[in-house]
Length: 154
Figure 1 (cartoon, rainbow, N blue to C red):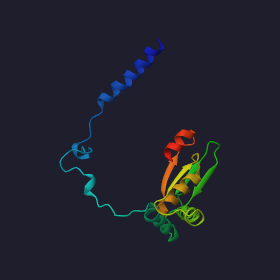
Figure 2 (cartoon, one colour; figure 1 turned 135 degrees about the horizontal axis):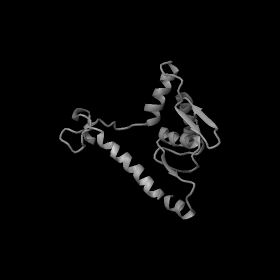
Figure 3 (cartoon, rainbow, N blue to C red; figure 1 turned 30 degrees about the horizontal axis):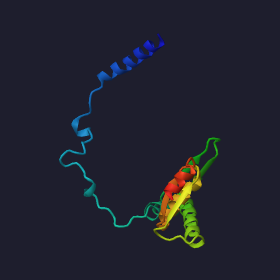
Figure 4 (cartoon, rainbow, N blue to C red; figure 1 turned 90 degrees about the vertical axis):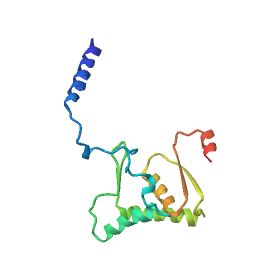
């Protein structure tokens, strides 16, 4: 009998949507297959793009000039409620340090591959952006991989 009550409740919700009218045509999203719809090749794509330089450093500069508010660029909270907050300037500095470790200490160069197995901790993001900054190819891996999975990826 409980399933019948749940069904009746869901049917009531379904019936209530019949009174909703569609948006006017000028407010509706156009289908991507329609004539005149945007296509991938309609946009200028830069020959080289570096997220760390073009985005992270741009907003770090805005913070430095006082043109950006105090909202964090990165906000991480774990299951126990511990928080890590970094501004764009802090993210830029930390990712430059990571990039220096990769290039100077480890001897990695642009085009080299770096596989990383870490749980989702803030340092994961520093490594990812540090790889972007240096042109190192980042290969993220979950900590649930078995030895055969790791060998396959390597």
